[in-house]
Structure formats: C-alpha cells, structure tokens
Length: 430
Image (cartoon, rainbow, N blue to C red; front, side, top):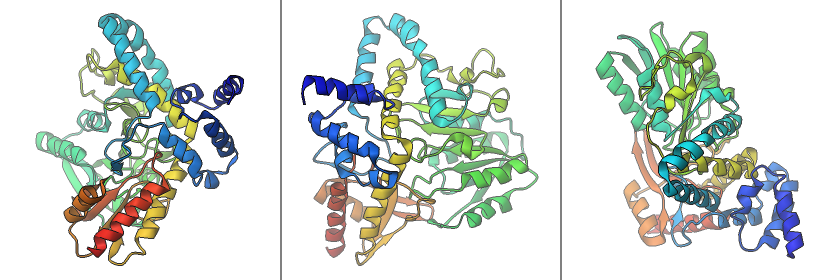
C-alpha cells in the first residue's frame, strides 16, 4: 500500500464512527485490512458475522495471549490496544502535574463521555452517571431507595451474588421483605418467565430486581415484558445489565426500567474499573446516593458521582472503547457473538455424553454458553481444559446451574472454538 493510498484509506475510516481511534490499533498488514474492511462494510449482518478474515483482523487489535485461549470474557474483557494506549497516555499526562491535569483538564472530559454513553444507551445524558462497576451502580440504587419495613422486593436465586448480598443487608438493616424466585434454566418461554414474576407481585411489592442476562449460563430474561407488568402496578424496576450493555443490540430506553447498572469493562472493553448507572430522570431526586454529595436530594445525576479522587485516565479512555464499539457496530457485534456461541454449542451437543445448558435461540442467549460432560465433575472438566489444553473457562455451581461457562468475544475466531471442541472431545473420551 502506498503512502497516498494508506492516507486515503485512513480518511475513509473516519467516515465510520471511531475510525481515528481504531486506526491507532490497526494490524500490521494495513493493505489486507483495507480489503477486508471494504468487503465487510458491504455485507449483510448475517454474512458479516461469518467473515472470518475481518474478525481475524479484529483479533489483531487486541494483545491477548496466543498461548492461553481465554474463554472467560464473562468475568472481565480485555481492552483493545487503542484503549490501552489511551489509558497509558492519560496516565502519563496526569503524572506530569496531577492536580492540574486531573482536575483542570481530564475532569472536563466527563461531560462529553456522559453524552456519548447516553447516545449509545439511547437515553438522556442527564440520566447517566459514570462510576466504577455494575456492583457500585446497582448498590447505589439498592441502598438509596426509600423503602420501609415490610416493603417487598422480588428477586431470584440466580441473580449475581453481590446484588443478593446487598439486598440481604438491606433486609437485615431495614426490615424489608425479600421474595425469592428460582428457575431451572435454560427456559425458552417468555410467558412462563413473566408469569412467575407477575404471580409474585403483591400490593406490598415496591421493587423488582431483574438480571437482564444471567451471568452463570447466559439466559436472557424478558425484561421489557416484566417491566411493563411491574409499572402497571407502580412497582419500580431495577435492571442488572452487567452482561448486556455493548453485548446485545438494544437501548436502555427499550426496557422501560427505572434504574440500570452495568460494567463498562465487560462487553464495551473499556478500562478495568469503569461502570455506568442509569436513573430515570423523574427518579433521581428521591434516590439517595451511595456517597454523600452536598445535596442528596438534588435532581442532578452528578450527585451519584461524588466519589472523591478517582482515576481520570480510566474515565477518559472509555471514549476510545466507545469508538471501537461503534466501528464494529452493535448489531454486527451481537450477531457475531451469537454465531460463535451457536457454532460451538451445536457441535458440542453432537458429542456423546456432552450436555449443553444454554439456549441456542438468540431471544434467550448470546455469547455465554454452558456445557457439562456426563461422568465428569465440573471441576474435573475445568481443570483438564486448563492443565491439558491451556483453555481458560470457569466452573459454575450455583442454584440449579452447574456446568462449564464458555464466553467468547469479538476477538475469538472459529479456529479458537475448534480448539475448544477438540479438547471437549478428548476429555469426554478420557
């Protein structure tokens, strides 16, 4: 590629959201990438998710280990090189004169990041607070709601432990009543799930806690349908979106919820320790912040950002992660992740003694998948995957859910998953 052609190519990339950010992490063979990207843009979503050449180049934008196959992106996702570079650059700048560059320069970048996150989420900027993770966002709501003794909260035994612990502390401290549901997932019947929640609602129910995607096995709950029923009864809706934001192709506004918390260091691939809280504008005033601001009853979303000194480099590098997300496109990303999950699960279920525990239907799952092997304990399979094949997964044993959780990401290729399938086949025969 000549210098003139390369400049033209990079100018074309700027027509794609995030082009400049992605250019900073281009793989070495820019000519090959240009051809692949040009082809990729013209493909339908269904075809784009199967374009292995393009996704191979996406993989080159990460610094993931070529030796260890990381299939536990459900825990925390790696950052593309462009985000790592931005974080290092902002950190170096901060260390030149911390109080000046942190408070007078980088702190001024929070409002643009807020607006960009709001645009990605499909809500107003004045409804978005930037914090450190989903637990902080959700516990802000759990401990900030004005609940009284005897008020009921509906939740499930399959929810995330941090949230369960927070609600139990609220129960111990304030005498609220927790009503537990328990499911045998996977379930491919929206009406059945919705009816379980609706049947649990009573005149005392004040809040329903909904995990948009169950982190253990990837089950997607019909949040909008449950939220619509809850709001008919004046029940507030809190959504744990730790595993769906920048993973599924949706807007928070689609869910009809009052509160939503997520970690940006998961599927958005933002720096570790970055998160986001959404609060419906009309709910801000009566929700107490987790960290006390000057006016706890303010209707300004920024009252939830009274964290004191924080990492400004982490906050600012969220911008590069948004660029990277937009470059791929939410719809294409969701389609690719579902394609990868479906590919390996369909192949795995053909193997004798291998059982899958995740739906293949895109309405009920996306990237996260789970399997088990008859005659092998969950720990035995997980240990064998790592010790013999250097494949990193996670063993899950939690409330009716038992299996090996496998979570690919956009940098995962079909060839990587073929390596997984070969390992599963070998372990089941051993």
